[in-house]
Amino acid sequence: MLQQDGLVRPDNRRTLLLDEAARLFGARGYDSTSMRDIATAVGMLPGSLYYHFPSKEDLLVAVYTLGMEQMLEAVQAAIAGETEPWTRLEAAAAAHLGTLLDKRGYAAAVIAGWPASSGAARAELIRERDRYEATFRDLVAALPLGPHQDRQFLRLALLGALNWTLAWYRPGGDGPETIARRLVAQFRG
Image: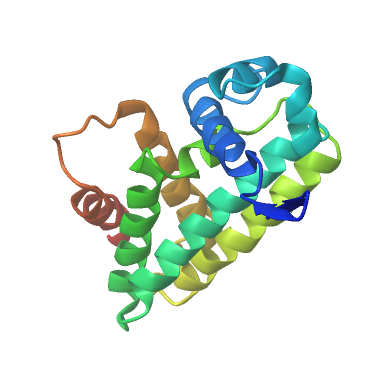
């Protein structure tokens, strides 16, 4: 909340900017979305956006962090009541996918949001991604796999396949639970 003239006013337009940046990053990708695009979409002068976020990279880090939090919360809630390792992985995959396909959330921006450039923002994105992926690392570590199955490859292939769903999924088809179950079955052997 902001305080002006003794009155408490709702916190400016930060949430609206985050929502619109997430939508545009998810739809167009980070590199194809300009600060002007975001400002125009919320009816703001482009220069005013920098009051809330000093740079486009700062805005991406904020969107990405919120998206990773949404995904992590959904996955943790989905696996909370499960004990069997494969069922836990299916539940996590379904939660990941459900969050990713939710147009109201920030998760699609997480997948499409990687900038081509490197730097401090990229390091923060990697830190957030690694924090999220630790949950999947633990889930895969608990699986009863054969001696020749590669746990790291399984985790990366599963997350890659789940994330690629954004490219081919169409509403009205199989839901996240069915897709996740079918996908995990490919690794179960």
